[in-house]
Length: 278
Image 1: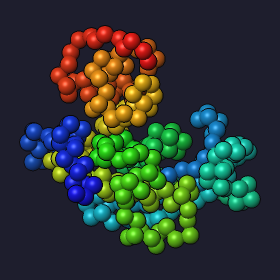
Image 2 (image 1 turned 180 degrees about the vertical axis):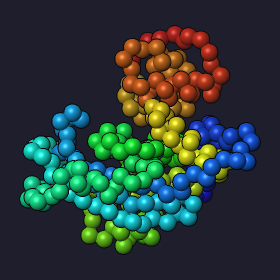
Image 3 (image 1 turned 90 degrees about the vertical axis):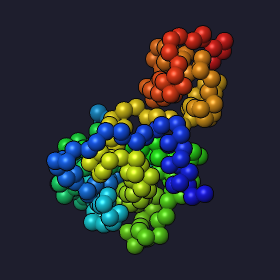
C-alpha cells in the first residue's frame, strides 16, 4: 500500500488531523495558494548570539503542486564566529563568506511572501524574523506520516519516501544541509503533506488555518524520546505513564502535549498512579 494511503488511514484512525464537521462559509476570502518554503544555515550559536550565513527558498503553489522561483544568498555573519559543529554540517567556509551581503541586504528579496514554511519553523522564524504566517513541516509531517521511522528532513526523504526527481534541476550542484537544497526538499515534503491532509479539510483556507495552528502548538510526537518507553510508539505506551508525563514538573512540552492528546483520545480522565520507575 502506498505510504500516503497508509498515512491517511492512520490519521483517520487516531484522529491526528480530524475531518471538520462544520459547513464552510460561502463568502470566505480566497486564501493565498503560494507558500515560500525557506531554510537558513547559521553560525550555530545561541539565538541571542547567532547569525544567519545562508538563506535559500523556493515557492510552492499548494493548488498546483508547482515548485519554482529558487533563490539563495550567502550572508555576512558580521563577526559572529561559526561554531565548528555547524561548519561540519553545512561546510560553509569563511572564504565563501568574504564579500557576502549583510543579512539585511541578503534577506530583502525573501521577505515578500504571505506564508512561509520551514522544516523547523521555530528555528528559522526566530532568526529571520519575517512577518507573515508560518507553517512547520516537521510538526505537520508528524500528523501526515506518523509511521515514518524518523521525522528529520533527510529521514523523511528516505522513509516517506519523497520523490525528488521532478526537482532534480533545482538540486543540481547542491548538497544536503545547504539552504537551497533543504528548502527544495522541504517544499516536496510540504506538497506531500498537503496531498495527505488537505482532503480532510473543507478547502485550502481551512487547511492553512489548521496547519498554522498545528505549527504553533507543541509537536504531537509519534514516539517518546526518553525514559522507559523511549522509541516506543505512543499508542503502545500505558495510560499510567502518559498520565505521569502530564503531571511531572519540568517535563518536555512536546511530551506533555502528546500525552494529553492520547489520553483524551482514550477517553481517560482523572489521575493515574505514578510509574514505579522512570
